[in-house]
Image (cartoon, rainbow, N blue to C red; front, side, top):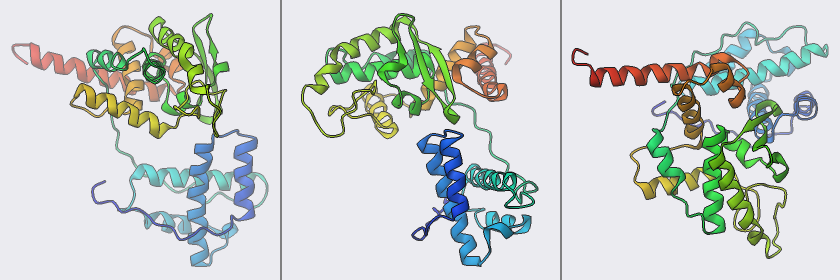
Length: 310
């Protein structure tokens, strides 16, 4: 949203014991990822701080109170961000309701903000191929970069999933990789020959990064930085930016764009939508169906360009 302001929070106070208990539930019983837990905690800390300013007890929040809290964010935050905060609060009260701490969930009657539907950004096959072949495979870091790109595109993995891979995640005999995705759900994804060849080339050179013992090394991580530590999502995004700049591509290629391209290219070549859903780890087929709209748009673009009476 143009001109959107960032909500700046005062220094967070101690977490309410019920919020802390809910977060422990998400971590221990639901096994949420650190990133997701961090988002929940940030959203609930903000809500808790606002309640403290208004002198409203957490257990006495009603629907009108919650609507007032969310209304202040309109014009400052994207609808998707407001929806995420509402989801965190709903989940908190659902948990407290199940434990008899509150009688009703104040978020039940609050409508989720309507969000803009963005079609996935897809990179053309020729540009994906050029990007994957840009890193030099004759050095440890070049071989690592090529392997990361091949796995992002060859398996349709999320960036966080790639950064979380361990050596033990690979089944080298069957060319399979065990991935832990959103909600800590596990799935098994096949990788093509080129992706696994790039992985084998990287694994042959990977021990060179551990020739010296340094603080922060992670011998279990599949992908490491030059000091042997585990890579971060931000680092992967910057790595892709470097290779895109070398190729002078006229587009921004986010790591997720390779996942979108994986799905769309499979669909364009006749893959079954249900199969793509399994590979991507989507809980709902409706999420995967976005890629059918992308393919229709591409078809119409070809029609408009080629048909004499378009």
